[in-house]
Image 1 (cartoon, rainbow, N blue to C red):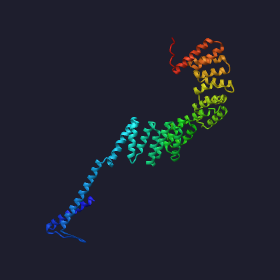
Image 2: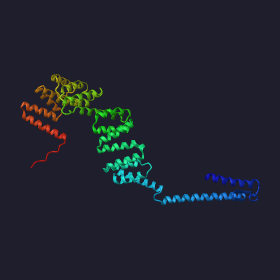
Image 3: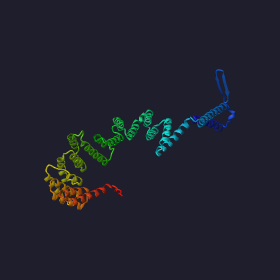
Length: 416
């Protein structure tokens, strides 16, 4: 409208100046005539007087609008409940609240962020910050109430609110509630990477290895984890699954053995070649009394993939054929003649077969390469059996000293 007013004014002025310049006629000599008659109203004037009246009227309207605008603006400055002051209060409360939240001043942060949320048309971030502050204060009911208010005000932010809710529930130790929240979100957002990551963390925390293994394909498909991290997570999950399966429920070792074997068969061929997983499976077999099966697993594996931890475990097993077991271990000695762990294993296998002389030779050789508390203990037992109690006691003492140094146990105070 301002442009139209100015355009009319310019046109009138241009028309007047043009008539005076091109026709050489003074404006005053050609006044024109304007007549406005409506019912009982009658207005008569010259054209230029009418134009001047329009200009004056326009000027009055413009000044009136300007005055009203200034009056409204001044009223906003003076009125503490005006929109201007409301926006200013929200800004100050949010700035102060987030600063206090970052600094760990939970009570003040809660108060300021609630104030900002109540007055803001987009309160989500304020409600989430206030919920965190309430959680830190241990006010869990208030925390959940703030999240419900956030959902009521911004229902389109359901996923963001639910993710924070599950995170806080997990931090409180409410694993079942957190799992329920995340499962609802997974049903509605099955491919969202943050939902999958939080489920992964929850399954790790609760040691729900079966559920974690079921989640791995989705984590891989959505590329929520890098290849190295995913491989490590898969290894950790299978390790936990094997350990969990090998725990007898109600003392039923046979049922636990069946579950353990089923878990091992469910693993891939590549996982059957990972020494750590093989060690866990073999140890669980040993604990459940299936030493022969564990020995038959380790013997061909060690022939192709020599591993010192598995070699030490092999010496604890009693296979079906002790002579064949000893022969296999002595075959490895050709490639690893200075391996103290292998020599300890050979000494133990000789003890199983009651080959006392060979056992002593292997154990003594092991000690020449490494002074290990297990080797000292095995040799001390053998010396005691052979009647050399002095040497036996000396080896026991050395083993205790070596074990004490490994555990970094402080020395006992001297008695007075």
